[in-house]
Image (cartoon, rainbow, N blue to C red; front, side, top):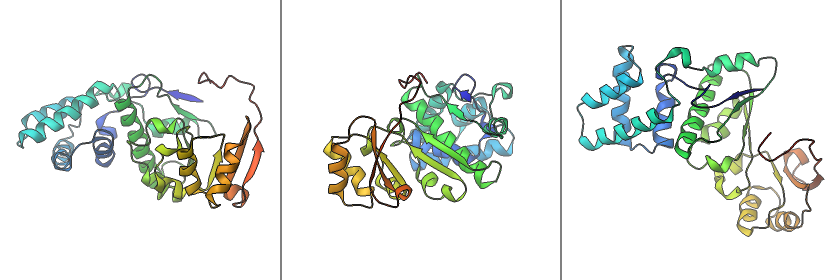
Length: 261
């Protein structure tokens, strides 16, 4: 089990990234407007052609770029967000590549990206980078299939781009599990792709309504069973139980399940 903490033992250089991953970060995590994104694309290609993709050169390029002042201001504010995140570095010796990390666990293991104590904006940057890099590595057949667990998914699911992962990427080998106690934060298009739902005790009507829309059984059945679930019991819906609702008892773990583990 390898634990990677952004800003500590997980940093990346701009040269490691492709343009699309960076644009995903700027657009989906940092809300960069379309006009500014087009100018950023031109700046990136300008630097790439000169083999000068570094944070320092990017800042200088934005400063001297001939464009509308509002566009420059928008680019600078996002540039400082990238800079202040501590996730990016110009020192290749500090950088971590996900390809190498996956190589280290080729015979089996887990990569944990530790988002504890990471600010909301920085969390979105790291999640967006991870998703984009997974898509890149899988489409280029650089890694095998992966199971992706999005723990506390409600903390970053809404502001980041998961559509590619839950639709196209399952064909390349990303099998995703979302873990959340706020079901209404997950978009309906993601629920529609879900093969299985493991539902614990929820009493909130809105939460139950959200989940029941995704199940292939009638909403009233889901609501009536879920409301009355005792502790340590779970309602299974989906392909795992051939779309027949099944209640199971969940074994207790011999570890503290309070975030420490």
